[in-house]
Image 1 (cartoon, rainbow over the protein chains, first blue to last red):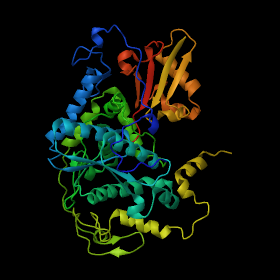
Image 2: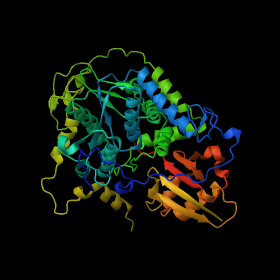
Image 3: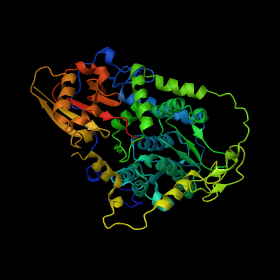
Image 4: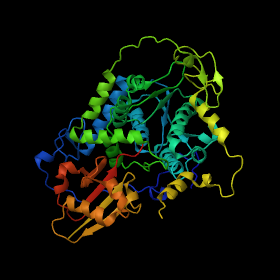
Length: 392
Length: 98
Protein backbone atom coordinates (compact mmCIF):
# COMPACT_ATOMS: atom_id res chain seq x y z
CA UNK A 1 0.00 0.00 0.00
CA UNK A 2 1.33 3.39 -0.93
CA UNK A 3 2.16 5.48 2.10
CA UNK A 4 1.40 9.12 1.71
CA UNK A 5 3.28 11.41 4.02
CA UNK A 6 1.07 13.43 6.34
CA UNK A 7 2.47 16.74 5.28
CA UNK A 8 2.04 16.32 1.55
CA UNK A 9 -0.78 18.79 1.26
CA UNK A 10 0.25 21.06 -1.59
CA UNK A 11 0.51 18.31 -4.21
CA UNK A 12 -1.77 18.73 -7.19
CA UNK A 13 -4.27 15.92 -7.41
CA UNK A 14 -4.02 13.36 -10.16
CA UNK A 15 -6.93 10.93 -10.43
CA UNK A 16 -5.16 8.29 -12.49
CA UNK A 17 -2.14 8.01 -10.21
CA UNK A 18 -4.23 7.55 -7.11
CA UNK A 19 -6.54 4.74 -8.12
CA UNK A 20 -9.85 6.55 -8.27
CA UNK A 21 -12.05 6.22 -11.35
CA UNK A 22 -14.52 9.09 -11.43
CA UNK A 23 -17.95 8.39 -12.98
CA UNK A 24 -18.12 9.09 -16.73
CA UNK A 25 -19.66 12.26 -18.04
CA UNK A 26 -22.67 11.65 -20.26
CA UNK A 27 -22.14 12.38 -23.96
CA UNK A 28 -25.77 12.32 -25.05
CA UNK A 29 -27.29 15.73 -24.44
CA UNK A 30 -30.85 16.23 -25.60
CA UNK A 31 -31.19 19.29 -27.81
CA UNK A 32 -34.92 19.52 -27.25
CA UNK A 33 -36.21 19.70 -23.72
CA UNK A 34 -39.91 19.71 -22.90
CA UNK A 35 -41.16 22.41 -20.55
CA UNK A 36 -42.19 19.68 -18.12
CA UNK A 37 -38.56 18.53 -17.92
CA UNK A 38 -37.25 21.89 -16.76
CA UNK A 39 -35.86 22.61 -13.32
CA UNK A 40 -38.63 23.92 -11.05
CA UNK A 41 -36.28 26.44 -9.44
CA UNK A 42 -34.46 28.15 -12.31
CA UNK A 43 -36.84 27.13 -15.12
CA UNK A 44 -34.01 27.16 -17.62
CA UNK A 45 -32.04 23.93 -17.30
CA UNK A 46 -33.05 20.30 -17.54
CA UNK A 47 -34.05 18.76 -14.20
CA UNK A 48 -31.77 15.86 -13.25
CA UNK A 49 -33.38 14.68 -10.05
CA UNK A 50 -36.48 14.80 -7.95
CA UNK A 51 -35.77 15.84 -4.38
CA UNK A 52 -37.07 13.17 -2.01
CA UNK A 53 -38.16 15.62 0.67
CA UNK A 54 -40.57 17.64 -1.46
CA UNK A 55 -40.61 15.91 -4.88
CA UNK A 56 -39.33 19.06 -6.53
CA UNK A 57 -37.55 18.55 -9.86
CA UNK A 58 -34.23 20.39 -9.93
CA UNK A 59 -31.19 20.76 -12.18
CA UNK A 60 -27.63 20.04 -11.11
CA UNK A 61 -26.65 23.62 -10.29
CA UNK A 62 -29.83 24.37 -8.33
CA UNK A 63 -29.38 21.06 -6.51
CA UNK A 64 -25.87 22.04 -5.40
CA UNK A 65 -27.21 25.38 -4.26
CA UNK A 66 -30.20 24.12 -2.25
CA UNK A 67 -28.33 21.15 -0.79
CA UNK A 68 -25.44 23.29 0.46
CA UNK A 69 -27.73 26.08 1.66
CA UNK A 70 -29.91 23.72 3.66
CA UNK A 71 -26.86 22.36 5.48
CA UNK A 72 -25.70 25.91 6.10
CA UNK A 73 -29.14 26.70 7.56
CA UNK A 74 -28.99 23.63 9.79
CA UNK A 75 -25.55 24.72 11.04
CA UNK A 76 -26.63 28.31 11.67
CA UNK A 77 -30.03 27.67 13.21
CA UNK A 78 -28.60 25.08 15.63
CA UNK A 79 -25.54 27.23 16.36
CA UNK A 80 -23.26 24.26 15.75
CA UNK A 81 -20.01 26.22 15.48
CA UNK A 82 -18.45 29.30 16.94
CA UNK A 83 -15.65 31.40 15.51
CA UNK A 84 -12.18 30.07 16.23
CA UNK A 85 -13.49 26.60 17.07
CA UNK A 86 -11.42 23.57 16.08
CA UNK A 87 -13.66 20.92 14.57
CA UNK A 88 -12.71 17.30 13.88
CA UNK A 89 -14.57 15.51 11.08
CA UNK A 90 -14.92 11.82 11.88
CA UNK A 91 -13.63 10.62 8.50
CA UNK A 92 -14.04 7.00 7.49
CA UNK A 93 -13.47 7.53 3.77
CA UNK A 94 -17.11 6.60 3.11
CA UNK A 95 -19.58 8.76 1.19
CA UNK A 96 -21.11 10.61 4.14
CA UNK A 97 -17.89 11.70 5.81
CA UNK A 98 -16.26 12.53 2.49
CA UNK A 99 -19.15 14.77 1.46
CA UNK A 100 -19.21 16.23 4.98
CA UNK A 101 -15.52 17.19 4.88
CA UNK A 102 -15.96 18.68 1.41
CA UNK A 103 -19.08 20.69 2.31
CA UNK A 104 -17.77 21.93 5.66
CA UNK A 105 -14.64 23.25 3.99
CA UNK A 106 -16.74 24.87 1.26
CA UNK A 107 -19.24 26.45 3.67
CA UNK A 108 -16.50 27.57 6.05
CA UNK A 109 -14.91 29.49 3.18
CA UNK A 110 -18.19 30.71 1.71
CA UNK A 111 -19.86 31.88 4.91
CA UNK A 112 -16.74 32.55 6.96
CA UNK A 113 -17.58 30.42 10.01
CA UNK A 114 -13.98 30.91 11.10
CA UNK A 115 -13.55 27.27 12.11
CA UNK A 116 -10.51 25.07 11.73
CA UNK A 117 -11.28 21.67 10.20
CA UNK A 118 -9.24 18.54 10.89
CA UNK A 119 -9.89 15.04 9.54
CA UNK A 120 -9.90 12.44 12.29
CA UNK A 121 -9.83 8.78 11.30
CA UNK A 122 -9.89 5.63 13.33
CA UNK A 123 -7.82 2.67 12.24
CA UNK A 124 -9.57 -0.37 13.63
CA UNK A 125 -6.97 -2.65 12.13
CA UNK A 126 -9.08 -4.57 9.64
CA UNK A 127 -6.86 -5.68 6.81
CA UNK A 128 -8.53 -5.58 3.40
CA UNK A 129 -11.10 -3.04 4.58
CA UNK A 130 -9.84 -0.25 6.79
CA UNK A 131 -6.41 0.01 5.21
CA UNK A 132 -8.12 0.60 1.86
CA UNK A 133 -10.57 3.14 3.24
CA UNK A 134 -7.75 4.97 5.03
CA UNK A 135 -6.01 5.26 1.68
CA UNK A 136 -9.14 7.12 0.52
CA UNK A 137 -8.99 9.43 3.55
CA UNK A 138 -5.33 10.11 2.78
CA UNK A 139 -6.32 11.08 -0.77
CA UNK A 140 -9.07 13.31 0.66
CA UNK A 141 -6.46 14.97 2.85
CA UNK A 142 -4.56 15.95 -0.28
CA UNK A 143 -7.66 16.79 -2.34
CA UNK A 144 -9.20 19.10 0.26
CA UNK A 145 -5.93 20.26 1.81
CA UNK A 146 -7.00 19.43 5.37
CA UNK A 147 -4.80 18.06 8.15
CA UNK A 148 -5.36 14.39 9.02
CA UNK A 149 -4.93 12.51 12.27
CA UNK A 150 -5.23 8.74 12.46
CA UNK A 151 -5.85 7.03 15.80
CA UNK A 152 -5.46 3.28 15.86
CA UNK A 153 -6.99 0.60 18.08
CA UNK A 154 -3.48 -0.86 18.17
CA UNK A 155 -2.12 2.27 19.91
CA UNK A 156 -5.10 2.81 22.19
CA UNK A 157 -5.96 -0.72 23.22
CA UNK A 158 -3.04 -2.81 21.99
CA UNK A 159 -5.51 -4.87 19.95
CA UNK A 160 -6.53 -4.70 16.30
CA UNK A 161 -10.02 -5.74 15.18
CA UNK A 162 -8.46 -8.64 13.26
CA UNK A 163 -6.89 -9.91 16.50
CA UNK A 164 -10.13 -9.34 18.41
CA UNK A 165 -12.08 -11.35 15.87
CA UNK A 166 -9.48 -14.11 15.95
CA UNK A 167 -9.88 -14.18 19.72
CA UNK A 168 -13.57 -13.49 20.31
CA UNK A 169 -15.16 -14.61 17.05
CA UNK A 170 -16.80 -12.74 14.23
CA UNK A 171 -20.25 -12.70 15.85
CA UNK A 172 -19.33 -10.12 18.49
CA UNK A 173 -17.16 -8.00 16.24
CA UNK A 174 -19.60 -5.07 15.96
CA UNK A 175 -20.02 -4.89 19.75
CA UNK A 176 -16.29 -4.51 20.31
CA UNK A 177 -15.76 -2.24 17.37
CA UNK A 178 -18.65 0.07 18.26
CA UNK A 179 -17.61 0.47 21.91
CA UNK A 180 -13.98 1.04 21.02
CA UNK A 181 -14.64 3.45 18.16
CA UNK A 182 -16.78 5.77 20.23
CA UNK A 183 -13.96 6.14 22.74
CA UNK A 184 -11.29 6.31 20.07
CA UNK A 185 -12.94 9.31 18.39
CA UNK A 186 -13.10 11.16 21.70
CA UNK A 187 -9.53 10.30 22.59
CA UNK A 188 -8.27 11.29 19.17
CA UNK A 189 -10.05 14.62 19.50
CA UNK A 190 -8.73 15.14 23.03
CA UNK A 191 -5.21 14.41 21.80
CA UNK A 192 -5.58 17.15 19.21
CA UNK A 193 -7.09 19.56 21.73
CA UNK A 194 -10.41 19.55 19.91
CA UNK A 195 -13.71 19.73 21.75
CA UNK A 196 -16.08 19.15 18.84
CA UNK A 197 -16.41 16.09 16.59
CA UNK A 198 -18.79 16.19 13.63
CA UNK A 199 -20.01 12.96 12.09
CA UNK A 200 -21.66 12.19 8.77
CA UNK A 201 -24.87 10.65 10.14
CA UNK A 202 -27.61 11.42 7.64
CA UNK A 203 -31.40 11.60 7.77
CA UNK A 204 -31.77 7.94 6.76
CA UNK A 205 -29.48 6.90 9.64
CA UNK A 206 -31.44 9.04 12.08
CA UNK A 207 -34.79 7.63 10.98
CA UNK A 208 -33.40 4.09 11.14
CA UNK A 209 -32.18 4.69 14.66
CA UNK A 210 -35.60 6.01 15.72
CA UNK A 211 -37.26 2.90 14.27
CA UNK A 212 -34.69 0.57 15.85
CA UNK A 213 -35.20 2.12 19.27
CA UNK A 214 -38.96 1.77 18.90
CA UNK A 215 -38.69 -1.89 17.82
CA UNK A 216 -36.35 -2.65 20.69
CA UNK A 217 -38.49 -0.70 23.10
CA UNK A 218 -35.38 1.22 24.10
CA UNK A 219 -37.16 4.26 25.51
CA UNK A 220 -34.04 5.59 27.24
CA UNK A 221 -32.28 6.04 23.92
CA UNK A 222 -35.34 7.07 21.95
CA UNK A 223 -35.53 10.57 23.33
CA UNK A 224 -31.86 11.34 22.88
CA UNK A 225 -31.44 9.67 19.51
CA UNK A 226 -32.62 12.58 17.40
CA UNK A 227 -30.60 15.34 19.05
CA UNK A 228 -28.32 17.17 16.64
CA UNK A 229 -25.73 17.91 19.33
CA UNK A 230 -24.94 15.27 21.93
CA UNK A 231 -22.71 15.82 24.90
CA UNK A 232 -22.44 14.00 28.18
CA UNK A 233 -22.10 16.18 31.24
CA UNK A 234 -18.52 16.18 32.34
CA UNK A 235 -17.27 15.37 28.86
CA UNK A 236 -15.22 18.07 27.16
CA UNK A 237 -16.15 16.70 23.75
CA UNK A 238 -19.41 17.38 21.99
CA UNK A 239 -20.63 15.66 18.86
CA UNK A 240 -22.87 16.99 16.17
CA UNK A 241 -24.51 15.82 12.98
CA UNK A 242 -24.80 18.56 10.33
CA UNK A 243 -26.35 16.03 7.87
CA UNK A 244 -29.19 15.20 10.24
CA UNK A 245 -31.77 16.39 7.70
CA UNK A 246 -29.87 15.39 4.55
CA UNK A 247 -31.14 12.43 2.56
CA UNK A 248 -28.70 9.65 1.82
CA UNK A 249 -29.85 9.70 -1.77
CA UNK A 250 -28.94 13.37 -2.12
CA UNK A 251 -25.57 12.84 -0.43
CA UNK A 252 -24.75 10.07 -2.90
CA UNK A 253 -25.94 12.22 -5.82
CA UNK A 254 -23.90 15.16 -4.57
CA UNK A 255 -20.79 12.97 -4.38
CA UNK A 256 -21.59 11.60 -7.83
CA UNK A 257 -22.07 14.96 -9.54
CA UNK A 258 -19.07 16.49 -7.79
CA UNK A 259 -17.03 13.36 -8.59
CA UNK A 260 -15.87 13.05 -5.00
CA UNK A 261 -13.51 10.22 -4.22
CA UNK A 262 -15.07 7.96 -1.61
CA UNK A 263 -14.70 4.40 -0.46
CA UNK A 264 -17.61 2.00 -0.65
CA UNK A 265 -16.99 -1.52 0.51
CA UNK A 266 -18.89 -3.26 3.24
CA UNK A 267 -16.84 -4.04 6.33
CA UNK A 268 -15.27 -7.51 6.12
CA UNK A 269 -16.96 -8.58 9.33
CA UNK A 270 -20.66 -9.34 9.58
CA UNK A 271 -22.78 -6.25 8.95
CA UNK A 272 -25.13 -5.17 11.70
CA UNK A 273 -28.05 -7.47 11.15
CA UNK A 274 -30.64 -5.57 13.09
CA UNK A 275 -29.87 -2.24 11.52
CA UNK A 276 -30.16 -4.04 8.19
CA UNK A 277 -33.77 -4.93 8.96
CA UNK A 278 -34.62 -1.36 9.91
CA UNK A 279 -32.79 -0.11 6.83
CA UNK A 280 -34.74 -2.36 4.50
CA UNK A 281 -38.02 -1.24 6.03
CA UNK A 282 -36.89 2.37 5.73
CA UNK A 283 -36.02 1.97 2.03
CA UNK A 284 -39.40 0.41 1.29
CA UNK A 285 -41.21 3.15 3.20
CA UNK A 286 -39.21 5.75 1.31
CA UNK A 287 -40.34 4.24 -2.00
CA UNK A 288 -43.97 4.68 -0.97
CA UNK A 289 -43.53 8.19 0.37
CA UNK A 290 -40.09 9.80 0.29
CA UNK A 291 -40.92 12.43 2.89
CA UNK A 292 -41.41 9.73 5.53
CA UNK A 293 -37.73 9.87 6.52
CA UNK A 294 -38.05 13.46 7.67
CA UNK A 295 -41.46 12.67 9.16
CA UNK A 296 -39.97 9.92 11.33
CA UNK A 297 -37.17 12.24 12.50
CA UNK A 298 -39.76 14.89 13.28
CA UNK A 299 -41.82 12.39 15.27
CA UNK A 300 -38.68 11.28 17.11
CA UNK A 301 -37.85 14.88 18.00
CA UNK A 302 -41.29 15.47 19.43
CA UNK A 303 -41.48 12.31 21.46
CA UNK A 304 -41.16 13.27 25.10
CA UNK A 305 -41.59 10.53 27.63
CA UNK A 306 -43.31 10.89 30.95
CA UNK A 307 -40.64 11.05 33.68
CA UNK A 308 -40.16 7.71 35.38
CA UNK A 309 -41.04 7.18 39.01
CA UNK A 310 -38.13 6.41 41.37
CA UNK A 311 -37.73 2.70 41.88
CA UNK A 312 -36.62 1.01 45.06
CA UNK A 313 -32.97 0.06 44.81
CA UNK A 314 -32.29 -3.64 44.75
CA UNK A 315 -28.92 -5.01 45.93
CA UNK A 316 -28.05 -6.05 42.39
CA UNK A 317 -28.10 -2.43 41.40
CA UNK A 318 -25.76 -1.38 44.15
CA UNK A 319 -23.22 -4.05 43.33
CA UNK A 320 -21.61 -4.39 40.00
CA UNK A 321 -20.51 -7.86 38.98
CA UNK A 322 -17.87 -7.98 36.31
CA UNK A 323 -17.14 -10.72 33.83
CA UNK A 324 -14.32 -12.20 35.90
CA UNK A 325 -16.53 -12.45 38.97
CA UNK A 326 -15.05 -9.42 40.72
CA UNK A 327 -17.57 -7.15 42.42
CA UNK A 328 -17.48 -3.38 42.77
CA UNK A 329 -19.35 -2.03 45.75
CA UNK A 330 -20.84 1.34 46.42
CA UNK A 331 -22.09 2.14 42.97
CA UNK A 332 -24.25 5.26 43.04
CA UNK A 333 -27.89 4.32 43.47
CA UNK A 334 -28.99 5.91 40.25
CA UNK A 335 -27.44 6.54 36.89
CA UNK A 336 -25.16 9.54 37.09
CA UNK A 337 -24.03 11.16 33.90
CA UNK A 338 -20.41 12.24 34.14
CA UNK A 339 -18.86 9.38 36.12
CA UNK A 340 -15.42 8.30 35.01
CA UNK A 341 -13.92 4.87 34.64
CA UNK A 342 -11.60 3.79 37.46
CA UNK A 343 -9.09 2.37 35.02
CA UNK A 344 -8.87 4.64 32.03
CA UNK A 345 -10.62 7.79 33.16
CA UNK A 346 -13.07 7.73 30.28
CA UNK A 347 -16.71 8.70 30.91
CA UNK A 348 -18.71 5.79 32.16
CA UNK A 349 -22.00 5.21 33.94
CA UNK A 350 -20.42 2.27 35.76
CA UNK A 351 -17.26 2.03 37.84
CA UNK A 352 -15.40 0.47 34.95
CA UNK A 353 -16.23 1.54 31.42
CA UNK A 354 -17.50 -0.85 28.81
CA UNK A 355 -14.27 -0.76 26.80
CA UNK A 356 -12.16 -1.73 29.82
CA UNK A 357 -14.56 -4.59 30.62
CA UNK A 358 -14.29 -5.86 27.05
CA UNK A 359 -10.50 -5.50 27.12
CA UNK A 360 -10.32 -7.40 30.38
CA UNK A 361 -12.19 -10.29 28.82
CA UNK A 362 -9.99 -10.20 25.75
CA UNK A 363 -6.72 -10.12 27.68
CA UNK A 364 -7.73 -13.24 29.55
CA UNK A 365 -8.28 -15.05 26.28
CA UNK A 366 -5.25 -13.77 24.44
CA UNK A 367 -3.26 -16.62 22.98
CA UNK A 368 -0.12 -17.30 24.95
CA UNK A 369 1.67 -18.51 21.84
CA UNK A 370 1.34 -17.58 18.21
CA UNK A 371 1.48 -19.97 15.31
CA UNK A 372 4.00 -19.54 12.54
CA UNK A 373 1.22 -19.10 10.04
CA UNK A 374 -0.51 -16.34 11.98
CA UNK A 375 -3.69 -15.63 10.05
CA UNK A 376 -4.65 -12.54 12.01
CA UNK A 377 -2.16 -10.43 10.13
CA UNK A 378 -3.47 -11.66 6.80
CA UNK A 379 -7.02 -10.55 7.57
CA UNK A 380 -8.82 -13.04 9.74
CA UNK A 381 -12.12 -11.80 8.38
CA UNK A 382 -11.19 -12.74 4.87
CA UNK A 383 -10.13 -16.17 5.91
CA UNK A 384 -13.34 -16.70 7.88
CA UNK A 385 -15.41 -15.59 4.93
CA UNK A 386 -13.53 -17.87 2.58
CA UNK A 387 -13.94 -20.80 4.92
CA UNK A 388 -17.65 -20.09 5.19
CA UNK A 389 -18.01 -20.20 1.44
CA UNK A 390 -16.38 -23.61 1.12
CA UNK A 391 -18.73 -26.36 0.03
CA UNK A 392 -18.16 -30.04 -0.31
CA UNK B 1 -28.68 -2.80 -31.91
CA UNK B 2 -27.64 -0.44 -29.18
CA UNK B 3 -24.33 0.24 -27.48
CA UNK B 4 -24.21 1.93 -24.11
CA UNK B 5 -21.87 2.51 -21.16
CA UNK B 6 -23.00 0.89 -17.92
CA UNK B 7 -21.40 1.85 -14.61
CA UNK B 8 -21.60 0.08 -11.28
CA UNK B 9 -20.69 2.53 -8.52
CA UNK B 10 -20.76 2.86 -4.75
CA UNK B 11 -19.39 -0.63 -4.21
CA UNK B 12 -21.79 -2.32 -6.64
CA UNK B 13 -18.86 -3.27 -8.87
CA UNK B 14 -18.27 -6.34 -6.69
CA UNK B 15 -21.10 -8.14 -8.47
CA UNK B 16 -19.60 -7.58 -11.95
CA UNK B 17 -15.97 -8.67 -11.63
CA UNK B 18 -15.00 -5.56 -9.65
CA UNK B 19 -15.03 -3.51 -12.83
CA UNK B 20 -16.78 -0.16 -12.51
CA UNK B 21 -17.27 0.74 -16.16
CA UNK B 22 -18.60 -1.64 -18.81
CA UNK B 23 -19.34 -1.20 -22.50
CA UNK B 24 -22.53 -3.09 -23.28
CA UNK B 25 -23.89 -3.94 -26.70
CA UNK B 26 -27.29 -5.57 -27.14
CA UNK B 27 -28.16 -6.84 -30.63
CA UNK B 28 -31.86 -6.21 -30.43
CA UNK B 29 -34.28 -3.52 -31.52
CA UNK B 30 -36.06 -1.25 -29.07
CA UNK B 31 -33.99 -2.05 -26.00
CA UNK B 32 -35.51 -0.43 -22.92
CA UNK B 33 -34.24 -0.22 -19.33
CA UNK B 34 -36.25 -3.29 -18.35
CA UNK B 35 -34.39 -5.31 -20.98
CA UNK B 36 -31.03 -3.87 -19.94
CA UNK B 37 -31.69 -4.83 -16.32
CA UNK B 38 -32.57 -8.39 -17.25
CA UNK B 39 -29.49 -8.49 -19.52
CA UNK B 40 -27.30 -7.41 -16.60
CA UNK B 41 -28.85 -10.00 -14.30
CA UNK B 42 -28.48 -12.80 -16.88
CA UNK B 43 -25.23 -12.00 -18.65
CA UNK B 44 -23.10 -9.71 -16.50
CA UNK B 45 -23.47 -10.76 -12.88
CA UNK B 46 -20.90 -13.51 -12.49
CA UNK B 47 -22.14 -15.13 -9.31
CA UNK B 48 -25.87 -15.86 -9.50
CA UNK B 49 -26.17 -15.42 -5.73
CA UNK B 50 -25.38 -11.76 -6.30
CA UNK B 51 -28.48 -11.17 -8.45
CA UNK B 52 -30.51 -10.40 -5.34
CA UNK B 53 -28.03 -7.67 -4.43
CA UNK B 54 -29.12 -5.94 -7.63
CA UNK B 55 -32.73 -7.00 -8.10
CA UNK B 56 -35.79 -7.21 -5.90
CA UNK B 57 -39.07 -8.45 -7.37
CA UNK B 58 -37.67 -8.15 -10.89
CA UNK B 59 -36.62 -4.53 -10.67
CA UNK B 60 -33.67 -2.58 -9.32
CA UNK B 61 -33.49 -2.87 -5.55
CA UNK B 62 -34.56 0.13 -3.49
CA UNK B 63 -31.36 1.74 -2.29
CA UNK B 64 -29.70 1.51 -5.68
CA UNK B 65 -29.68 4.83 -7.44
CA UNK B 66 -30.23 4.53 -11.20
CA UNK B 67 -29.14 7.37 -13.45
CA UNK B 68 -29.61 7.73 -17.21
CA UNK B 69 -27.09 10.27 -18.51
CA UNK B 70 -26.82 11.65 -14.97
CA UNK B 71 -30.62 12.07 -14.70
CA UNK B 72 -32.61 10.08 -12.17
CA UNK B 73 -34.34 7.39 -14.22
CA UNK B 74 -37.70 8.26 -12.65
CA UNK B 75 -37.61 11.46 -14.67
CA UNK B 76 -36.78 9.60 -17.89
CA UNK B 77 -39.62 7.11 -17.79
CA UNK B 78 -38.02 4.43 -15.60
CA UNK B 79 -38.09 0.91 -17.01
CA UNK B 80 -39.78 2.09 -20.18
CA UNK B 81 -36.90 4.37 -21.26
CA UNK B 82 -35.61 3.38 -24.71
CA UNK B 83 -31.83 3.21 -24.78
CA UNK B 84 -29.92 5.24 -27.33
CA UNK B 85 -26.37 4.75 -28.54
CA UNK B 86 -23.71 6.21 -26.22
CA UNK B 87 -26.10 6.57 -23.29
CA UNK B 88 -24.39 6.36 -19.90
CA UNK B 89 -26.39 4.31 -17.40
CA UNK B 90 -25.12 4.21 -13.83
CA UNK B 91 -26.21 2.12 -10.87
CA UNK B 92 -24.95 3.38 -7.50
CA UNK B 93 -25.45 1.58 -4.23
CA UNK B 94 -26.37 4.02 -1.48
CA UNK B 95 -26.43 1.45 1.29
CA UNK B 96 -22.79 1.20 2.29
CA UNK B 97 -21.61 2.79 5.47
CA UNK B 98 -20.62 6.40 5.53
